[in-house]
Structure formats: structure tokens, C-alpha cells
Length: 250
Image (cartoon, rainbow, N blue to C red):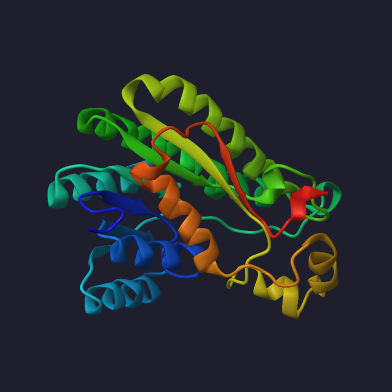
């Protein structure tokens, strides 16, 4: 039996990077996966790979800042599988800006995708989890939600808010057996981080702060999400799971 057998999981931002790894691993461990993203072609490839490996998954185009699209995704999950047990709020964007050199439009975009999209997802998935008798919400934050990071003010603000929001939701819905935790990756090699590494010259900065002599891979985060989604973490809520190669140990 897989670690997620019988569970239904919605994973946003599942077209690539950490979201794709989470979708594949969850399906491998027995979950029925609703994989969502705005990048439809890449998302379909992920779901096709899952199906070829014998997993159960569906790809849905999904803009996380749209309430109507959230309603449709959750309704489709319930229609297909009867319930929702797990939500992984993984979709996000980066923003290499300091406070003084950013435009407010960019600030609002980052907040919409990295924070408000998670809020909307929680708003509409919690009633379904209440019907199902419980569930696990995993909000993918960042080490930037715990410590300050240079040149990423909009991103860290959103991720910090998501961290504390997770705690509040854990308190509000613990009585319903709904667990809410935040997961905090360090430097993970993904399509989102590669530009800063290859073009932005950030590798020395990342290396200085990462205590292990290597960066993370998407599967490193997926296994953390798997633990939080599974019943193995049944007594864990309102907590931060930090997977950062030692960045925040200093």
C-alpha cells in the first residue's frame, strides 16, 4: 500500500519544478492527483508520465488568482473522486526586486499569485475537507518566509504572510481535523531559480548561506510534502517544515 492510498490531492503549479515532482510522487504513493497550472502543455506531459507509470491523475488549466477557476477545480475533483483530502498550494512566482526599485503593479502580482491564490484555494477547499472529515493543507512558503533575503522583498513578504496564515488556519480548523502546515524550501534547482543562478550571478550568495555542499532538487521538497500529506504527520499542524540545506541554521 502506498503512503497516500485512498487520498485525493490537488497540487497547483504542477507543470514543472517542485509541483511536478510532488504530483509524480503523490501518484506513485497511491494518491489520485488533480494537477493544475496555467502552462497546459507542460502540465499534460506530467500527467501523461504519471499515467504511463500506472498512476491516476488529471490535468486542469488553472489560474490560482481566479475564484471561479478554484471553484471549478475543486468541483471537478469532487465530481471525479468524491472528495478532497490534500491541497498543496505550490504555484508561485519569483520577484528579484528591492522595495525602492519595484513597481506596485509587480508587488500586487506577486501577492496575488503567491499569497492570495493560496487564500482562495483554502477558502473553497476547507468546506470539502470538513465534509470529508478532515484533510491536510500544505502551503509552500520559502526560507524567505522565515529570514530576510536580499533583493526579493515582494516574494519574501508574500511567503512570510503565508507562513503565519498557515498557523492561523491551523488554529481555526484543527477541531475539524484539518491540518495546515507550511513547507519552507531553501535553494532548489528549478526553472524558477535557474535564471538567478545562470544569469543573475547568485550562485556564490546561495553557496555562502547553504551549509551543505549542494543545492536541493525538486524531489527533496516533494518528499517533505508527502510526509505532510500522509497520516504519518497526523499530529502535526501549524508548523513549519524547513528543507533548506542549513540556510536558516545560522
